[in-house]
Length: 421
Image 1: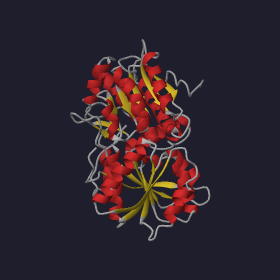
Image 2: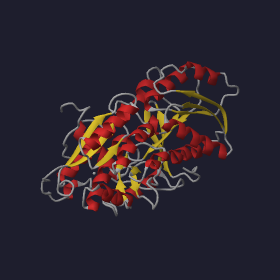
Image 3: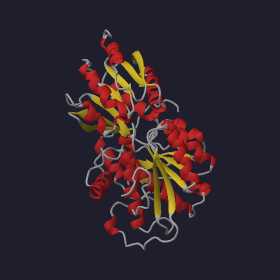
Image 4: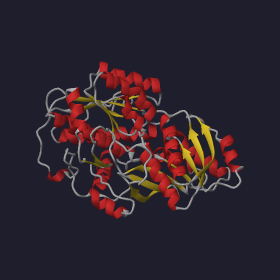
């Protein structure tokens, strides 16, 4: 496959989720997403054995641009998301394409660099003339790419960036995941249930995602009576955290847990260095932890344990949709999905293709209107609906504990007290 980091060209290329309340057990959440494989707005059927053979797509391709960070600090999230996207496109084309035309994904590598992301998004819009965009897994990169789409009236579905500020870029920008305020609230409610009342925060102050997540968590945690005894900073790309961790070691008394708001490129190293420094309290964080690098880097000396994080539904429950996606991904790539961002990338392409089909055209404003009208789209990562005036879906949150380097589902929740976006 030639030059995969520059162009993941024409790809021939299923979803279901659900919502539950905190009191509902994980099994009930799984049953909730098993209701059906298509929603009011559509949704690609994973069980393709029952699907009649479709006519092969023909004509000019429907081009969706995908800016992804395939190298650098966000590669461990964006590469699985890219692969999930490619799987969705292959399945869509096997079912007859979009509007009877082949779906083509055009992927460029943003190299985890904000200016590069802006540049490749401009290239996708101006040179490749994509009719929609679906990609990226971080807020700072979305804030670089989004204005290009907004200015050109190109619908852009953010598949993994979680700060609600993303949709403030403009009305052509939509989020696929929950907001950071939601996952922060889920984490705050979990630690309260454990009886943990004090924490120390370590925050990457250079990135929007980590700043917003930490601020929302602090708001939810202190609002429920918790106390932040220390807040320290680092910057993305740092590799030595000894100064900050030494300050944590010297805290007396020690906090009940540490909330570390980190990107995927650093969290494994931070965990390893924290444990080596003698910090034994639980470490809590967000979906940036959902990377193979957490166990790979964090578990080099001793296995990662007592790490709890919030992430997206889609791989960790036992729903039929999740299992079908895992099986399809395994069959396509010869490996299980590396993390839930593979499922987010998959859902992103399916949802955008569904909106184009409902619009009946590739006209940008018409596709935007169809996307805004999405109701009950059953994705692998949850049911997706956009309420009037909002382009962020209400979705459940998976709480994960790392036990001996393995991610283990605690429960799937919908938090009760969410800070305003």
